[in-house]
Amino acid sequence: MKEMEKLYDLLNSFKKGNSDKEDKLSLEEELGNMEAFENMEERIMNDISELDAPNDSVKNKLDAAFAEKFRADKPHQMGIIPITKLSSKKPWKVFAYAASVSLFMYFTVQVGFQDMGNFNTTYPLLADSIGEVSIDSNHISVDSVIFPNN
Amino acid sequence: MNIQTEMKIVTQESDESLVERIGLGDKPAFDELYKRYNKQLFSFFMKMLARDREKCEDFLQDIFLRLFEKSNYFDSSRKFKPWFYSVAHNMVKNEYKKLQVRQIISRDADTENVRVNGHNPETTTQEKFFSEKLDLLLMKIDPEKKAAFLLKYKEGFAINEIAEMQGVKEGTIKSRLFYVKKYLSQELAEFKPNA
Image (cartoon, rainbow over the protein chains, first blue to last red):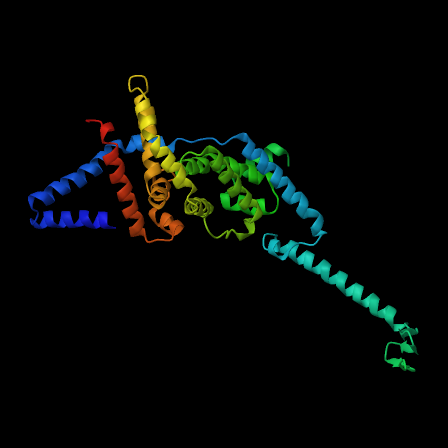
């Protein structure tokens, strides 16, 4: 900021007529620099606008990395869309996806509990104890529990 | 949809839309974005990193790798180009912090006389001589000032965009530009049309 402040100060002094000889020379120099830049601006711009091209190997490596990245991602998805990617899907697709997941979960749970209704078996609880456990749709009962005596 | 039709659609898409597609593994979208920016970014790195070609190619590769590996971090409500260049600018800034570039600059500064004096003005075109001198001068400028100058005059960003990229006020950017312009005009005085 100091550079610009100096220029503003010089300009203000000049406008107010307070400039001494040294100030005027400084102002001339600053304005001369700006004029010099303007004279060379096109040349400088042309030079810095020239484009360098990278080696083709950069693109080849990127292509390989891209293929690797997205080939590696796909097997892990197993048909499950990551939540972060849902926002980029169309709303009707998100709805259809949610509906199919809900239906799948509903039927899985229903069928699972229906099977458990007829469940009646005996479980060995510990090596030295046997308990008879009955489970039906209303209650779970344990006939006896024998703990090891040692 | 055939490949030609798809390519035509991709070339008409905005940068922001291409980035979203890249995140989903869309290769033509990636190719198109690379085509749009590879030379621009590479030239930016070349100017910023003392024309170290190998390093600049590494940087270019790295920035595009980040693009498809972390495309989810891109906020699609923002403009892509300033965001991409702010990533490039930060990469360069970190590199300067490692002092590697300073080593290159000091090495090049030592050889400056050899390079400049080694050219016979009669056999070297004026433009080439000008270009080399400009490169050397840019190497000596403070990286933040140089980046501001290149982003403004090479890439055509607005002052407020550069200020956002560099995390400073607009006045600071104006001052940095003023400094570089003054420095260049003084150092390139021998090339003035009337000189």
